[in-house]
Length: 292
Image (cartoon, rainbow, N blue to C red; front, side, top):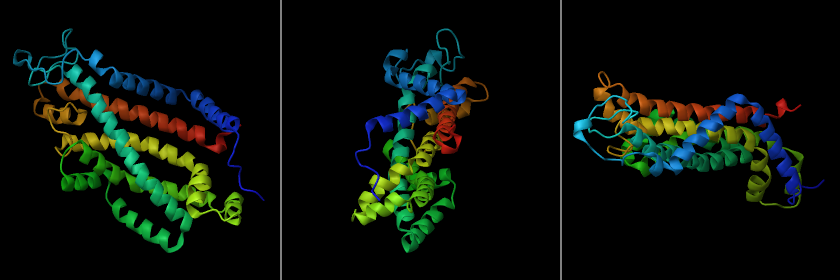
């Protein structure tokens, strides 16, 4: 018996990736989500060219103007163009979601892999500790951590990242438990491979499908959580044009000036929906039961 070849042929890996891509392309909902996400990324990359005004270009004479040809999303209480602020704020909302998810994955994958691989007391201690965190909803845990750390972009990403890590850890643990007793793992032990090498060379690569799906969904959850913290005053604060902070600024005028909150809220909804659509498609594409 031999360990799965470390020099696995590139064409085999490429063929697996192409098969996943072919399945993903057949999912129309996932493709719609991918198109929307690509559009948002283009907005982030070329935001300075798309925005018609600067972040804080104020004109009190134009305050609370409804959507028009001059200001397609209207203006806020300070006369700032909402469209420009939404475009320029996309980088904050999306980047916080991605970085917070990376933090969640870094913590969760390591804890879940160690827990699932070693089992026994190690598994029990780690899972019980994570259960304590999971007794609180993700957003409430993020609020608690953010209140302790203080406001700011970095602290917001840390708070959201930590609060999302237990979910990824549990998924990782479950995936690792499904592969740790495979024959190629036993073969790795027979050649005296270290635990570190077995976990990161043989176990995790074969348990990545559900982890990838969970991480994708976590990006959407992180964007929503970061926007919620900014709305509550625990994340980014005005005049930073983060979508949640824009909602917070406009809530006092929402009754008479609906556009102030409608468009930032719509962007949050579209972003979260697009990423969830991609996550659903990836789940179907990576599910081996769907192979023909």
